[in-house]
Length: 395
Image (tube, rainbow, N blue to C red; front, side, top):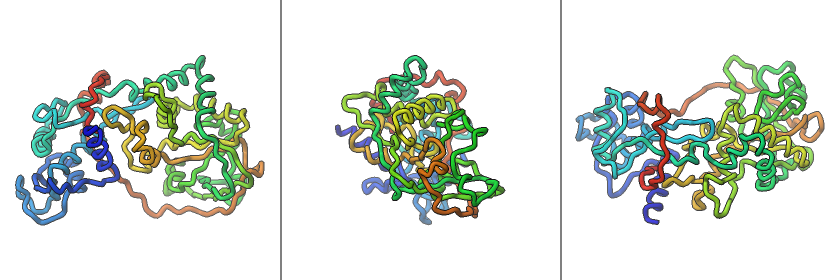
């Protein structure tokens, strides 16, 4: 329990750039100018302490200073978070670190990073190693595997429709629909589901099965539509005119006595983090939901983690944070909901266009982190091997 509480605290400190200022660990050891690698320099500068003290290592007064705890945070950002390898379903960081591997770092290091790794290892009193994730992190989740099997899919889809909550949307719950270069910007029909000739290209819609997509998050709408400064953009505020029953797949599903490899919640979580190869599964879920009399689906955006800045596939000692009761609200906050309504609800008077505005992109910014450019794991996916040594999970 003590190890779990320590790991829980570490996870909460890593997220949201909430870098710890440990009272018992305020000694300055390094600064951002100590590093040769440009990415490490920038990351260290962002999280370091801004003062004019002379660095005890390189004597710089301009570099941002690092304590032991901040060095460990730097390692987490650069070598763990930035080496996540996404698979068709699921994924995991390629590198991890912990105190047990101190002075035993065993990763492939490019020559310009060799001295920097030694600095991090000594100042942080840690060692890095190639992470061996559990198989469930790599998509070995039984309900997810059944969804990929056309002979078994229908049974799991029925289970999903039963397990997840149904919400009623009212006129108090508006959402946005963005249009890029519409023919007639003030025509309400432009903000309905796409015309027939454009169906079958997105997550839920199919030939003969139109779907209107929207989101309560306007900035997410802009990203989902891959907008550019050259586009003429218009956004409609859409409001339900009647109660709409929707399946909420963005909810974190509570499953008592269920492990990750048998979890429907993990299966759905991975499904909506997957790309176009997952669309056939999503379309069957939507079709079955409509057959059950539902008006649509609330689902987690593929870009949720880009929007929130959270760490995907996050675990503590090999357990998904989605399976830990203390972290339920934290895990739920990482999912940004989108809305898919079946049919053409504007034309069917199920939703109304409340107003339309032109959107002007004035400025774009990026919140980025850096990671190592190469190591053997990027070129050889056999380096990711399963293990059950929960003590080696440094997250």
